[in-house]
Image (cartoon, rainbow, N blue to C red; front, side, top):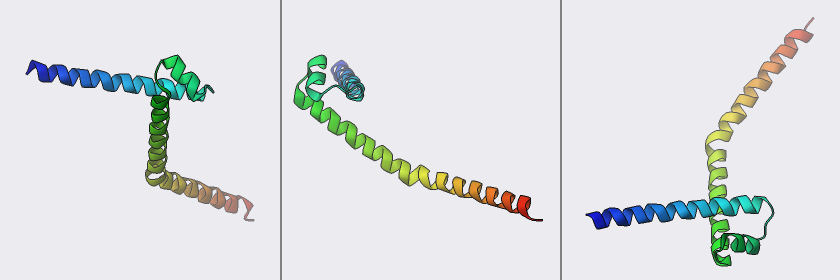
Length: 96
């Protein structure tokens, strides 16, 4: 049983390390560092940085798709309601 718990803790620790590295890759990319520079700074292989960037890009695509599917229609409707309210107010103000 202890072996199983230890293996689970190692898995969690590894996942946290990967997440930390991906966060750093994203941060360094946003600061304009090249992939080669990032691999040197983080002391990981260039292929690892490339995989992390691909993963981050896929995550961004997923987040954008989710936003478009779930949030954007609601925001669009809110804008239309607001525009209609403005149009109605304008009509009331300009009607003699």
